[in-house]
Amino acid sequence: MPSLSEAYRSHPVHVQHKHPDLNSLQELPESYTWTHHGHDDHTNSPASNESVPVIDLNDPNASKLIHHACTTWGAYQVLNHGIPMSLLQDIQWVGETLFSLPSHQKHKAARSPDGVDGYGLARISSFFPKLMWSEGFTIVGSPLEHFRQLWPQDYDKYCDFVMQYDEAMKKLVGKLMLLMLDSLGITKEDLKWAGSKGQFEKTCAALQLNSYPTCPDPDRAMGLAAHTDSTLLTILYQNNISGLQVHRKGVGWVTVPPLSGGLVINVGDLLHILSNGLYPSVLHRVLVNRIQRRLSVAYLCGPPPNVEICPHAKLVGPNKPPLYKAVTWNEYLGTKAKHFNKALSTVRLCAPS
Ligand SMILES: O=C(O)CCC(=O)C(=O)O
Ligand SMILES: [Fe+2]
Image (cartoon, rainbow, N blue to C red):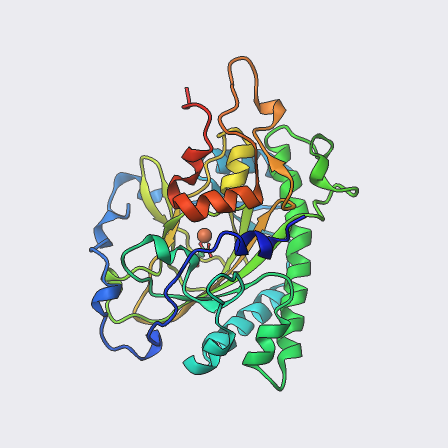
């Protein structure tokens, strides 16, 4: 069975590796200048009071609320998710410390050209002519080797925080998967890969730390370009700096305001497939600002690598043909590495009615 890192490794996306230290630039270089995008958000439109739903996981109606949020937005924020605030602060501190290291130090843990983990530009960079105003660090499995390069003296305390975060996220994934499937009328017994305890303990994940340094010309820069996640679901912690936007059909770009202790849940491409197109995988992007560095931590969660994901039988019928063919995460990552935002349409069987 291919591991997640093997899956990524077999589908390398080539990203230019030498990039300037964004923290030291006084002007936006041409290579980072996107066309002006300040006008294309929804803030002046009549729908500006629309916002991504906030759901209390202790609410007895959570499953219904999730159904509504996922069909309309493909995203929601959660409160009372069980992750202690101290753990969120710890992982944020790891990110802050990591990205504050001198550039040459960070490059000691650079992602290898065909690799998945380590320091570098966003993997999606190769699909855009302009560079993004961000830096990232990806962790799959143990961060030990890279952290040893970054912090030769005290790497173990940073590793501990990552492991604790990973452990807590795994539990939350179990809870969220149950709720999100329930919201589709699917039980854990309906999915073989839900695991013997029905807690989705075999799901695979990558942890992505993102840093968006302050920018001298934020209106013309892009922190992270519009994309959907190749996951089942993504659990995102954003510190208290705004920047994340989601796209809603008919409304446009909508900012997801940071919520103290809140987590953003994105529907990824594989859950979109599993839901037979009912839940859109949310298109999202990140804008930057000139005042404060923004940090985010994304837990990118997918199925066990060799499991085939297809529209669930309960969501398919005579009037609802399956919209997608079955794909493993590995196969889908390959498709995404080739076709990026058109990947879903390449695994599509028929047009929606
Ligand atoms: O920084 C954010 O808020 C979003 C990050 C993201 O979309 C990703 O890592 O896939
Ligand atoms: Fe994302």
